[in-house]
Length: 249
Image 1 (spheres, rainbow, N blue to C red):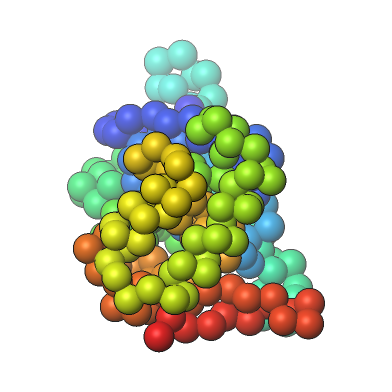
Image 2: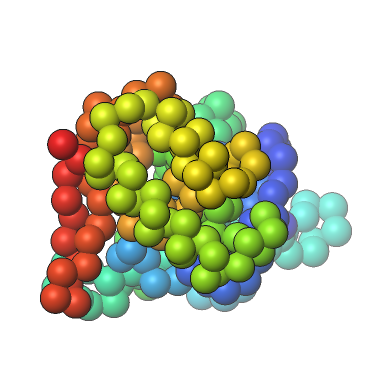
């Protein structure tokens, strides 16, 4: 199997796929969170095996063919592509694309480049867009912010019911709209008013972002010392059954 030479494995529940996904490196994890957050993504398949790679052997030279089998045992290697992604394009059509996630240092290795070339030819034969992504192409802060907020959707893990957290979310939305204090001060006041322990306000804030009930710049560090206005927070308000975002003023 095509196993990365560095990194640590992670098992993460994907709400988009409704299952646990298996990721082999930190870079794969960072890219996964970008996919999980993207509303155009419909499905994610990770560590996708190219089981019928032999269908393109006529397109390979000797150096590529030797990557398909163990040279000593002749046991076939399973070449995998990190992610095969199903998405909806701007015209509403379903499309599929494949991405190999690699640490940039791995691209200096001949064996890695040859395995990537096999993948490129495989996906080209199937008319599926293929590209290699390294840690340098991944917006790190955005991925970290997504990871930080998504875990708040598992409200039961924190001892709250969905109805309770939704009630708290509505209250905090109003406070974010009406206050010019720092986020930290707003959350502290919210906890005192709700008679909840420290950290509850931050959980509700993360839930609001993860549920897209408020919008915030996910590419920037979310500083609790800043006010909602300074962070450019927009609050989702339902008007006539339609979702509208009101800017904090």
